[in-house]
Image 1 (cartoon, one colour):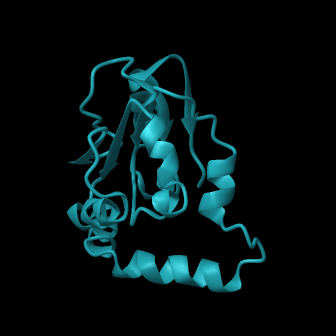
Image 2 (cartoon, one colour):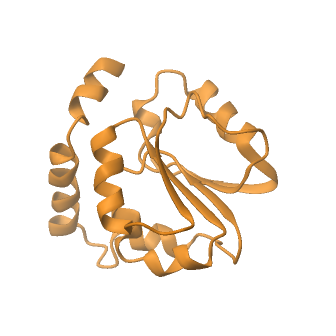
Length: 148
């Protein structure tokens, strides 16, 4: 299964098509990413990890929130997705971009206040391992947001 997922998301074209379908036919005029982001509790000076950033849709209307974060690490297992998200967010002192698999998060234990992993788990071979990794890098009292 993972080979099919890697092939599907090697380029952002397939995801762009899905996003446009949602925009065109969704009854939710706020849009999924704006709605979900409105429910996040992002306070000043938090360290945020986004796993599976896709094309950066989450940040298109919410990039102002990045400025109040201590650090935002944006990741995806697809180099093209990370590149696409970087074109949305741009170069900022508090943002880093990395190629990463949710099943092998390359950060120390208890590093992040918030971990975001939207529309990702259905692509993961070992969901318990992925969730264990998310829990491992979350600080005590941290929040994980996962919509799928």
